[in-house]
Length: 357
Image 1 (tube, rainbow, N blue to C red):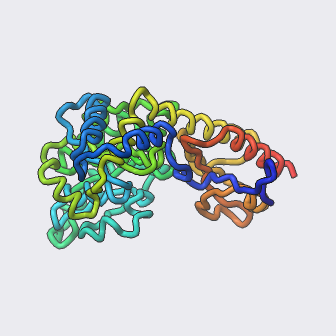
Image 2 (cartoon, rainbow, N blue to C red):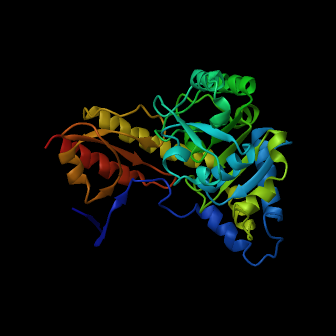
Image 3 (tube, rainbow, N blue to C red):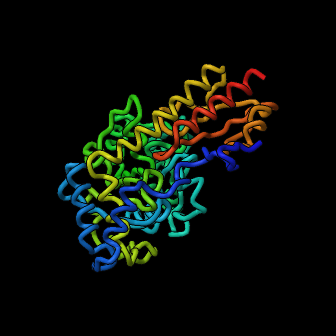
């Protein structure tokens, strides 16, 4: 079944949060500045403007800010800069670098050391114990040495870290001489989530480096890399270039982040997506459908009967997660900065109809 409105057939997409183009303000400014000549490779006035906006938001005037085109590119660039040749990075087994980047970090020569997760998160105790076991092994010099910790907020399962959890991770990283890197591809959705107690200034104080995502948050493309640790700043642009991440027309990234982070637009768009996702979550629970995880962000993971999913399949896209039992599967519905409220309403109506069929 396909949905028909005003004589047009189409499928409503809930499989990801990057299915739309870019916020109109970004498109307007790109058009307005189209024939302005600038320097290349991120050394233009728009990138400087965006970097200054970010430094103001994070209250860290000494932070370095760089703009890259995508999340995988940002992750492999930061981690290859942070790690020595014999080191690897600790990550949840569900972490993006461990499960969804085609071995990009490994291709730079650094092993991803995957850890069991709890709702997508890893703990300071896990990191500490992993390091203890490594150095307790008589043959530890023959084994990849932990050199960094990778986390994302929100996680791949939509959950969020607390201030306390990040402070505990920071303490272990300091004691074990590890770099703490936070992937913020969906950072705004985490900051806008109910129960969140993180802020941008706090992240700048606790992480050695983190990203502010644009691709999934209203930009056409782009991730801002924020480096707080002075030890990671040296020669970082050399590493960006070596990894293929130095965009000749860097202005396209600077303009997007200038608009996205101006006047509260970033959190406004994030709140829109989270609000619609939580509306869907409430409807799923009202229909008696359990959740794989309790996510407060724009990603929701219901466990649904296969018969219901079959009925939805022609009208909506979603992301399959796992088989739960013989007749149920866990899937992901993802809202975005541009999701239309009426599309969520249609999905809720069809879930309710299918639940009582």
